[in-house]
Each structure stands twice: as C-alpha cells, then as structure tokens.
Length: 354
Image 1 (cartoon, rainbow, N blue to C red):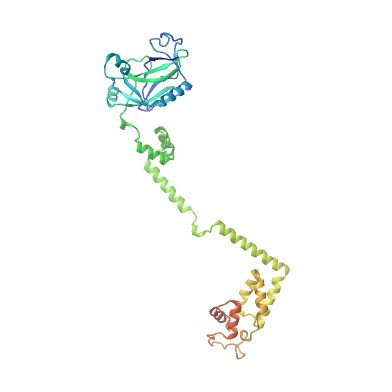
Image 2: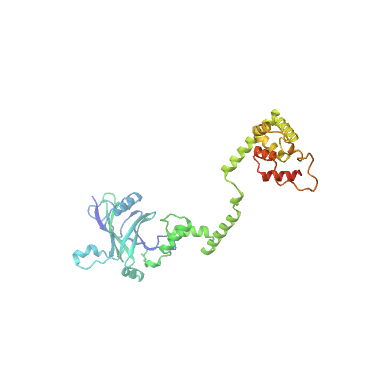
C-alpha cells in the first residue's frame, strides 16, 4: 500500500561550489527527512516518523520515471492538483527532463519556461515542492508525481532554486562536442569532464597555444622518422640474408673439401690453353663459388682457340695499333658458349690489350 502526499523541499544550483550544474534541482535529500509540520508522522494510517530515500529505492524511483511516456510537470503552487477544485489554469513552469541520484539526494534536470525563469531570477519564486508517493510502513519514497515552484517549503535549511537561460550554458553544444573529440573523451562526457581535460592538458595555455604545440610535436616526429627509401621491407631483408647464408655455406663446403681449389686450377688451365678468354677470368672464378657445375660443364665442352692467345698471324697486336672491330668465328663461338654479347667481348679484349 502507498499513499500520496506533498512536501516542499528546495534546492539551489551551486556551479562555483561543486554543486549541481545550472538547470538542476534537488527534489529529496538522501537518508531520513520530515516536514516542519510533522509529516509523515501526523498523517492518518502512517506508522513512520520520517520519509526515507537511499540508493536502492532511488534507483527504483528513477526506473519508474523512465517507464513513463508523459513528462513530469513543474507547475506553480501545485495548481495541477488544485485545478479541478478551483477551476483556475494550471500553466507549466517547466518540465523534468531527467532524474539522477547523487550522494546527497535525488536531482532533476528542469527545462524552465521563459515565464518561470523570469520569476526565479526576480526572486519571486524560490523553492521546489515535489508531489510523491511513499510506503506508509517504511517511509520509502516510491514515485515522483510532479513538482511545483513555491515560497513555503516544508523543510528548513534548504537553499533557493535558480534558473538560467538556454544560452547561458558555460559551453555551447557544438563547443562541447568539438572538445570531446579533441581530447578523445566519451560521446556523453559532460562539461566537468571536458573542463578537467582542459586543465590537465592545458597547463595554463590557451587552446591556440596547445594546438600549436601539438603541431610542433607532429612536425618533430616526422623529421625524426626514418626515410622509407633507405630501408627495405623485413621480408625482403630476411630472404636476402637467407640467400647469402646459403651461398656462404656452399662456398665453405667447397673450400672445405678442396673442390673450389681444384675448380680454380681447371679455370687457370682453361685460361692458359685458350678455352677461356682472359676477360672472363673474374666471371668464371666468381661463378665457381655459387654455380661450380656450370663452369665445369663449360670447360669440359670448350675447345682451345689460338685466336684467344695471339693474333691470326701468330704475333700480339702491335702497340698503338687499333683493335679489331669485328670478332673472328672462334671469338663468336666463345661468346655463344659463355652467354656474352659481342659488344661485351670486344670491350673485354680492349681492357686486356689484345
């Protein structure tokens, strides 16, 4: 069983003292509380001497409010209740947009009408009186029905309510959203969280100075970053290292069993008898380390050519005489055997002075 009664409880916004933000009012204090006229103990059928609000029944009260489809009204002097009897209008002073439980009580965010805001700012209305239901056995507050602006609160010691215009907010919506994004805050971060981020990161700087500092840090980071053109992907580096290790192991193996020394001797013999031109000595000995079978196959099939050791007349090219501009048939054969172009072969002959 629950019974509905009215009680006046006031609240004031304290933006400079850590209190609720403008536009919020306190409906109830936390803990046990009673009216100056003795309620609820003076009410018929009620066994308790005080109403009670704690975190548990505050959560249930908020859940009931969220289940409503019709918003809760804040009127003047509870005229919404009295209108059926006195026939007078019951204009809204504001509408409760949200309820929130704090450590010291239950708070409501109110969207005031222009008329109500003017009354409050002129100090013509100062307090809030909620209409609520409660359990007569325990005194627990169960549900908020409405609230009213009044000048006769039921509780002493409560502060006066204040109001602000919609554009009096310390932070416009667009500014708030931009700062949330700038500081990487949650989409529902409130003004207090944004201001805390500003104070923590700003260190007394203006926003312009902070942005300039961030730009400078970004530029410095780019300058110190490694030049991608001077590096290769890790996969390519690893593959090259593995190939080099494989070749080094092969060379070591050849050197270890004497095969490389024997093949070098064969190359020297081929150079001496004309099977291999002198210009190919470097290539042959380098290839012998990583592809010895190719060199052995070539030497085995090559035919000694006198043309590689001397001129066609049996003598060396006279000093200062121009080199032959075309290859002999024997030289063309050697190029084909070695996979060399005629141009490269001629260049090699020039270097050798033959």
